[in-house]
Length: 347
Image (cartoon, rainbow, N blue to C red; front, side, top):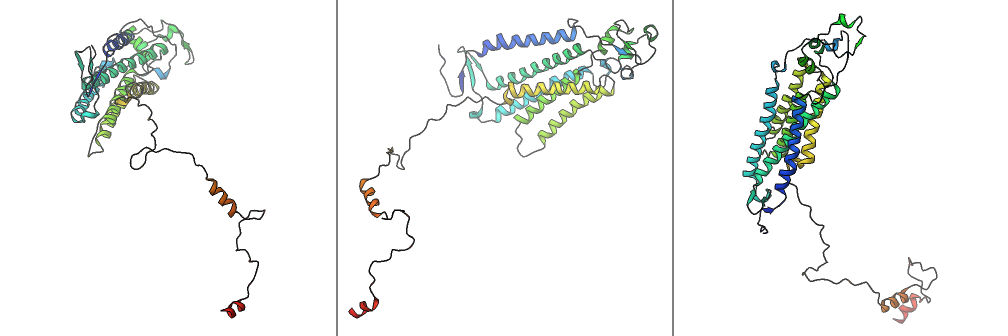
């Protein structure tokens, strides 16, 4: 049974199947892949060698990540709560203040299910954000597993036996897998430095939220509200990277690579996937050419211009007789000159 089209209502029979069998499947696969990268040994870390007494990797061990000034639990809580609250508040304000004609249409499917535009936008924006969050985690973990770059405190966690390894100079390169005598879990964590996952997640969350605030929020009467919110979020994201470097948990190159990864994913999703948080406008057909009409609204008929034979003959008679057909600048001299005296005598 076909659904009757009403103003502000659009029927669709594909939104539910696409959501259940395409988007949820992709989302579940992304979450599983992020889980295997983070909590399992399915993808082994590349083992890199090191130089004896290398000062680049000889920083003191700062302790586990939970003892950091910005622990991972705090980062994960903020990157989840701040964008969620911002999008919820922004969509509620936009829904109750925007004119009805400018809002998205309500979608009805199967003659029973109605999807409110407010609910659709919230699910769309938060769903894309969650997808990007897990994607950023996958990109960061994949880079750490493939490169195997050491952290600045790698040698402090590794605790190599330089005597047994025969280290006699700083130019000697050690490639043995059993060179480390420290805790294997700590050593494995010290081999995952590039790129910084915490920096990538913080910048991804900040850029996504900043773009939402900039493109969706409408602030009348004030010009500093949106810049203040945006710069505060970006400053917090940058602070995460600075703390990671200050505590010898990452190098500057690791943090910058994490910033680039998170920012690039956020910009791509906002601009190419959800159209800058705006409603997609349907393409209009090209306008048809209109027929010319008179002032009174009556249709006009355009005919070709035809020269009259009489006008052509008159033009031939008026044309000069000279062969050069050049126009005269002065009047022609008369053939007979009548003296003025004779005229006056006759009068």
